[in-house]
Structure formats: structure tokens, C-alpha cells
Length: 479
Ligand code: F6P
Image 1: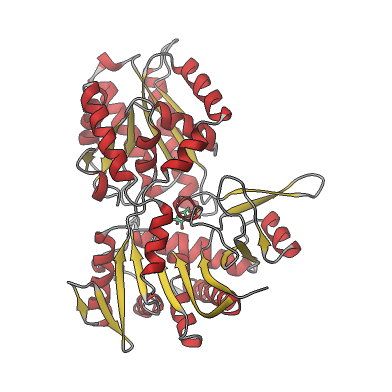
Image 2: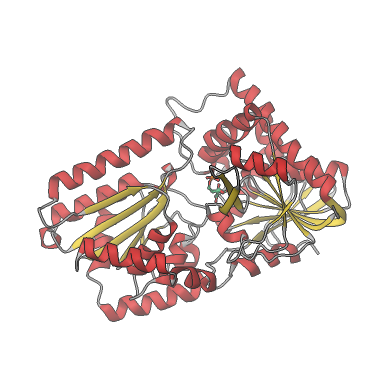
């Protein structure tokens, strides 16, 4: 295989495979904001995407064709090479489930219930070894796959150690790292053990360019560099000096991909869902949310806000239905399983309290169905996005783009998307259930003209930096 000039590395790859009964392999697009962003980066035989094999089918695919050339109509991946790494299961569990998702994700989203967790003991230190090996496996694949002076775009907290591993062995490479999550402020980041904080920060500082989705997250990273590594930060230029080099930080606010979304949302399966959902809810107004079943998405407080609205404003009974579509996520992490159960419990309580023979106040589906979600995007009168903390939240940008009739947006101040959408959304404190309930009512009662006008401006801001340009900006920054 030729060496690549441009390399992307991420835990979750652009596609996931499934094995059919006759043994043939099928593939479809992977999930999550990172893949949505990167799936349209363009395709070229010069580009190699290195990711982890996440299932037995992925592993089977990796064994059959180590560097498959994918031709996925609609996802613009034609010609790009993808290499799936078959990481030993124990190492993968330590790295992905325990360190990345149960620790780093919790730190950056400030999710810990501190009387019990975290606890950094001998078991954690051994999991950390797994995290190192996993990062080393990615670094190795990138080193062997890259041409001289190639540009490497490493993605996310899973791969925080990779930039330094690459730089130590190949100073010719131009290395970027992009964080799709928030970054914890030093006051929270300090809960990590001293040596782990250092390894993470120095690992990322191996890059030439560090990208973030919001100025807030970039500034938090720089504050961590000042506080824990005592490095010199130039706040004007957003650079930090490390190992005799200047590392630059950039803020690249990923936007929605309007063109491909509109094309996908016009398909027959989405139309069918739209008809089906409309039959089910009649002419009730639709309050929509679509998330992974993810602690940081704050689904329970969102449901509680809806309950408070119904309790305090009986005039809305029978006139609004809440569609809550939750994609199953990270079932290997106990907190996620418990949270999903809690979401289901609260949803049941709401229906028990308010449902009548001809009105279902809340329809909760814990299932992955992209076409059905797109139908809900189109039909939403009000969209609720209330994360406790979120790197960006692309759904907040995608729904206005697809909205048939202009939707109102209730948006958490703690989502990166609030930087671009805050002026035209109803911005709420995600912990304040009553404020969220009031905003839901304001959104439901917003005059049509105002709702449409706000939605038009939302679309403009949501599409200001489409994925292709977002990625080009990062490559440009490496020149
Ligand atoms: O957007 C942040 C992110 O962690 C991505 O890296 C990831 O692909 C997505 O959320 C979904 O999470 P996961 O890959 O663990 O399902």
C-alpha cells in the first residue's frame, strides 16, 4: 500500500460492519458527532483513516481486507482507505470503557458524584497501562502508514497520548489533535493523579496544532497547561511553549452539513416515518429531543421540566407531545445502564400522571433509528437540547436546518453550540428545571413569525462552518 499524505485517527471509524447469515459483510455509517463531522471530509486515495475495530464483524472485516477501500454512496468516502485496528479485547476494555469513557469523559463533562467516584487505585493504574498500549497501537499504525511530512489529524480524548508518541519517532510529521468534548477547568482536572494529568497534557502537546469546538474549552486547556505544567501561555495568540516549540490552539466550531442532511431527510423511509408519527400524535405540537442515552445530555432533568410544564399549565394537556429519541450508548459502563433505566422510569411516571385515552404526552424510544430521528427533526415545533456540558451538540445545529416549519430552540448555556446559536435560542441553565419548563412554554407559545425568523438565523449560524471546511481549516493550520 502507498503511504498516505493525510491521515485521520479516531476510536470510532466512519463505518461499522455487520455480518449477515451467509457470512457476507455489510457496512453502514458509524454514529456520533465525530463521525458526522468527518464523514464528509472528502475522499482521496492519499487519505488513510485509522480506527478501532469495535465489533466481531469489524474484526472480521479487518482480517479480510486490512486496508479496505470503501465506496459508500452518500457518505463521500469513495477512495479513502480505512484501517481498522484489532486491539486485544482486554486492552480495548481498559482503554475505551474504563479510562476513556468512565474517567476522561466524566472529568471533561464534570459528571462525577464525588462521594463515591472517582477513585484512583492500583486497578486504575493498570487500566492506564491498557490506555497507553491502545494509544501506542494507533501511533504504530500511523507511523507505518504515513509518507514523509504527512499531515496527521488525531481525534479526541481516546487518543490524547498519540501526538507525543508520533513526534518522538517522526519529527517530520505535521500533527493536529482535535477535541470533540469540552475540556475540564483546572479546578476539576486536578482530581486526576499528578502523573496522569502530566501525561495527558504533554501527550497532546506533542501536536503542532490543538483544535477545540469552543473558545471556552481551548481556554480551559491553556489554563491547565499554566497550572499543572507551569508553561508560558500567550493568551493573545493562543499559543503555548512546550519542548522548545510553539503549540498553537485553534477554535473550529463544527457546523451542520446542510446539503447531505437535506438529501438524506428527503428519502422515502423518512417520509414514511413522518406520516406514521403524524398519525400517532395528531395535530399536537411536537417537542423533540434526540440524544445518545448519555449522562451529560441531561435527559432526566429535561423530562422533569416537561412534567413541570404540564403540572403548571394544564391548558397544554392534549396539545403537546414530547418525542424523546434516545440512542443506546456505552452499555458497558454501569452508570449508563442505570441512567437509561432512570430515563425510562421518569418517562413512565409522566405518562401515568397525564396520559388520557386519546393523548400520549410522551413518546420515549430507546433505539437507534436515524430515519425516524430525521422525521422528528423535520416535524419539531420545539427542540430541547439541555446538556450539562457538551463539546458542541450537532443536533442543535442539524434540526433547524431540516425543520419543515421553523422550530424554536431551547438550548443549554453549557453546550458549545450556544456560542453560535445563543442569540436566537432560548438559553437555559441545564440544572434549573423550572427555568427550562418556562422556556419550553415560551417556545411553544412563540408567535409563528418570530419562530420562523429566529429559525432562519439559527440555520445561517448553524451552517457557517460545514464539516468539509472545518476539516480543511485544521489541515490548513498545519501548513
Ligand atoms: O463526540 C464525542 C464522542 O466521544 C466521539 O468521539 C464519539 O464517537 C461520540 O462521542 C460517541 O461516543 P462513542 O463513540 O463512545 O459511542
